[in-house]
Image (cartoon, rainbow, N blue to C red; front, side, top):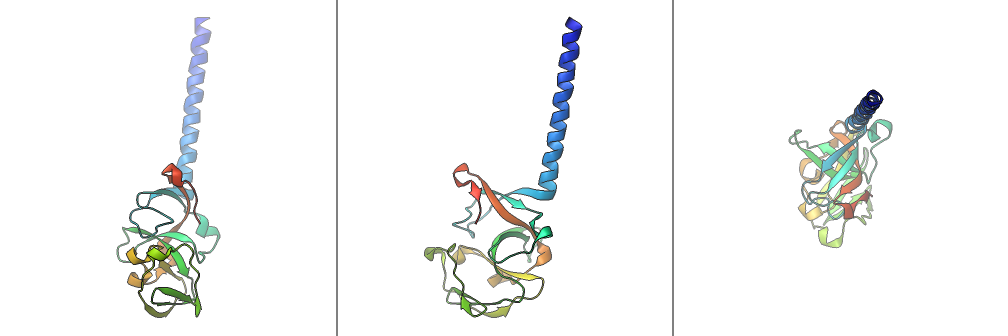
Length: 178
């Protein structure tokens, strides 16, 4: 009877170890190939994303689909590829982007930006720029505190490695990003 219990507990232990290994392998696959946790550093994307907020980025989204206007993307900073930035795509290849006293004009029309509250707008201007093929024009939502395409220029497609999709920490901010 004691031998049966010992064999039974040994089998349960082996089963538990097998389940842990499978769970770990699935987790590694998801983090390496699909979703990656990222900590937001800075306030340039407020109010959508706050400093120290934790989000998941989808690393596979742009292998299947195109980067679209309005997407919140994570990319390697053009001035120092060891740093990652997170910004909103405002202009896609072929778009004419101009900023007149803080108002973004896209292809000659005023861009409606409900994600930029009045208190976060600025009065900066920028002469018209046509976004080259394979590049994107990005801006932070907190315009008066953001270093973005107004400062460092357009972002090449190859530098974009993820789409921000879900906030998970702090829990009161948990949810899908818009």
